[in-house]
Length: 190
Ligand code: 5GP
Image (cartoon, rainbow, N blue to C red; front, side, top):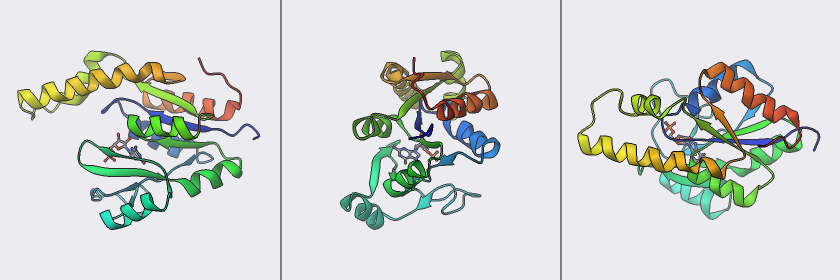
């Protein structure tokens, strides 16, 4: 491979993975970003084939059964999400810097099948900031709030499983750091 590498971006809920991925998409059109399949419904403004491939349970079952997904997981106990394998392989073969933005369960699966990828943990600037982002709207019950915080604690502990940590102080800086990792082509992991 000539300098191209697969970067897997994961991190705790509400850390801003999606926003950082969107910044990469805007500022670095040379980077290929995987489009996941999901069984959740499209939100207003989301376009099928751009933000996600929106599929029903039958189609998701078929993709799993035929081994077409590199990884998949149930996220937030709500819907299934997965990474189509073919486009990842094609992009890497074409020598493009490539990225997956997936949850922790998915990152662990890719670690098993593509250990040569670079696993990046996106971390909030502080615990307090994560709490603000998680419970900021103040619409949850006390139990719901506790449940989310428990999940966030467990997710933050996953940092040590990753090769590199990027702190999400500012979205564009985080995006630039990520792209530099993809383009460096050497194993600069800490
Ligand atoms: P949302 O529904 O808000 O777009 O995404 C919810 C969560 O699903 C995010 O944490 C995102 O990282 C994760 N996710 C998106 N696509 C995939 C995927 O293909 N595989 C896995 N494992 N998680 C995904």
